[in-house]
Image (cartoon, rainbow, N blue to C red; front, side, top):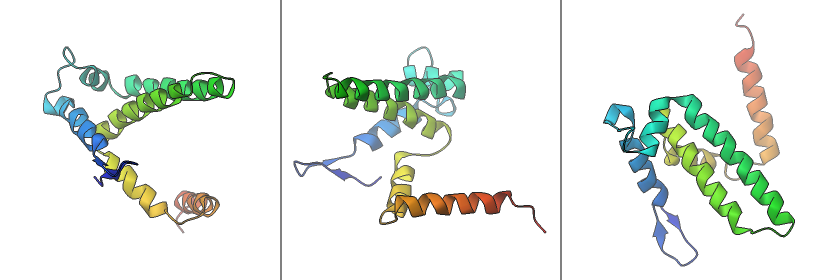
Length: 132
């Protein structure tokens, strides 16, 4: 994974370290659901961690809405951290890592979001079209 440079100039590979821990909790790697929250989520299967992703996404929205009305803005960061964490569990389950997401973001860099979305729609239509 590409290291991220923080405002203070130091590098952080916290996501890569966390991804390695999560991967070590995969059932195929001997993750013990009795000893690890991540292993428990993975052992329960996609419904468990996908439900958590939905819950955490809602909590991000609620924290942002609260912040707009005088609430504690730092809760946004806390909830996004929870969302990223549970999303990383899903990535590991499906055989991906944060570096795969970073690579996709880098691929999109410099492309208009409007253009990128339109291109995805065209590709989706092409993949759905019957083969003649």
